[in-house]
Image (cartoon, rainbow, N blue to C red; front, side, top):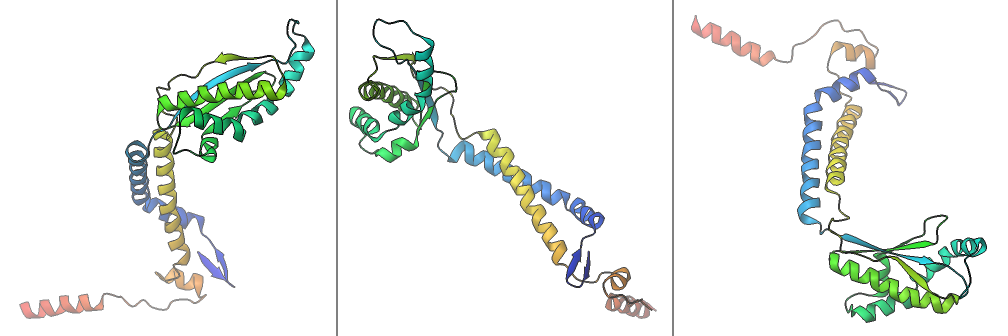
Length: 241
């Protein structure tokens, strides 16, 4: 690493050799962080489960056949249906029906996700909860209340159930593998960062080559740093004699 006029020139070869020399430390830190992420995701963070129900919406009058115009209009209105599903009226009604005393409107809205796949008339309602059974109950209740609300507001005939919510058997989050890999990567990057930072901040002169490189001076002689050790060895030899 050269410093000229406050400009730092980094020797990539020297930096790479330093990182290679600290590879054991970097890998050890990565393994430690990975094991920490594994422990936290598996034993500390409470798992959450997702349950999904789907509704099929078609805007048509009673006793009439479905036309292409009906399909196109219904597809364009799916975003409106999604907003009605997430409306305050629907969520507060769900809280009352399920007697969710400790849950407020904003809390229920934060665990609700409404998806409207493009070019379809299907709306998917997904609820996340720590209790898989409660996730299913909330999702089905939202579907029922939203169907009534959409029918009244949009003045359509009916909303069909495309898929009822079921009890999820696998947790949605946290992902143990993702947490483990990400934690290990972050740990290795942090240690490597401090190794590079220490290299950049180290302006000590370690050899005669550094003197010529940093100061532009030629070295005439080298003074050993271990003078005391050499004196001790000489004293021991004289005592033996």
